[in-house]
Amino acid sequence: MKLAQFLRAAIVATFLSNCMSAPAPIQTPPTIRVIAVPSIPLPVAIAKMNGVFAKYGVEVQAEVAPSSDALRKALASGEADLAHAAVDNAVAMDETADVVIVMGGEGSRNELIAQPSVHSVTELRGKILIVDAVHTAYALQLKKILLAEGLQTGRDYELKPVGTTPQRLQAMREHKDYAASMLGPHTSVLAKHAGFVSLGSTRQLIGPYQANGAFLTRRWAREHSDTLVRYLAAYIESQRWLLEPANRSRVLELLMKQWHLPAPVADEVYALLKDGWFEEDARFDLEGFKNVLKLRAEVEGQWKGRPPAPEKYYDPSCYQEALSKVKAAR
Image (cartoon, rainbow, N blue to C red; front, side, top):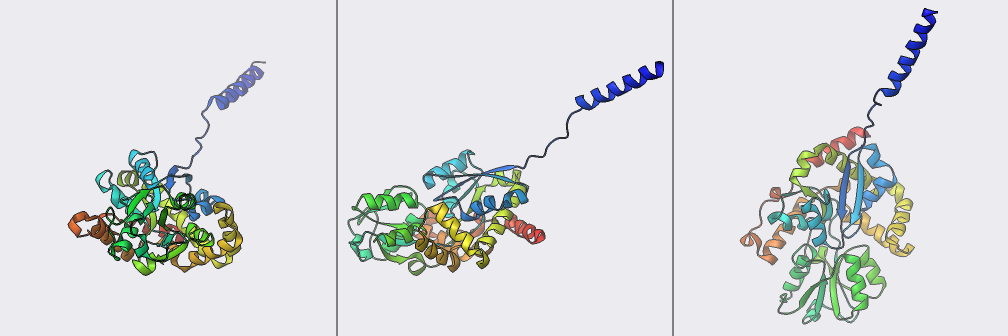
């Protein structure tokens, strides 16, 4: 009898012990909040679609900013962890936040797109030209192109901030007095299909230019270095998938779905994508970035006209570690 009571008590005690013991903690992947202009980068969409972020143990929340001004404010305030945009925005943040560029990704395929009635750069004299923000990135490209023709902002033409690339095309459709803007793919392709004219590409008129890349505050990079490396590794792997010829049909489907492109436009955009618009392994174009700094020095007069060394803003260490992680994961 006593033995039976003892056994029953032991069973109850074991049951209670199992019920009351704390469950094993579930490891939640770290989340990185990404903000971008003019749209979510294709490799981010691909990494989500193919489960590549999960493979590298990170979660990503991505949103599009209405302008580069809004993007820079979100990054500086801590509302976002990492930005994808023209890297000149990182340079522009130098006085307000300690920001570092950690990866490239895209070269500039911008074109100076004008109303159908405009046939040369000199015809832009006295016109309103629209930009995202008047002192950064592609507005500086525009100023440089016009300066080569003797046209100065404020004297020979007016610059009006409107917003991101798709917003500028829509504004040009609605306001014929908006004579021209710098537009990149896919919007530039849509514009030409709609009858707008190209007055030249940055490739022809300016030369190599490091366009979109990834940048963030140095503090966040230090405090979350492992998360950052994992994110970059997922991005690199997804950019490889994007450029792989075997994936052409799926990429075209993505272009049509994400950017609402008709099939002929998607084909043209894909051709640009394969023609150096998206860099292999999302690499950073150092010579193109030197041109970014040179342009800012010449056009804005920053640093008394003498651009600093690229290393002031660019640190490849996390990218190199991410590249090694991708190779190890193959």
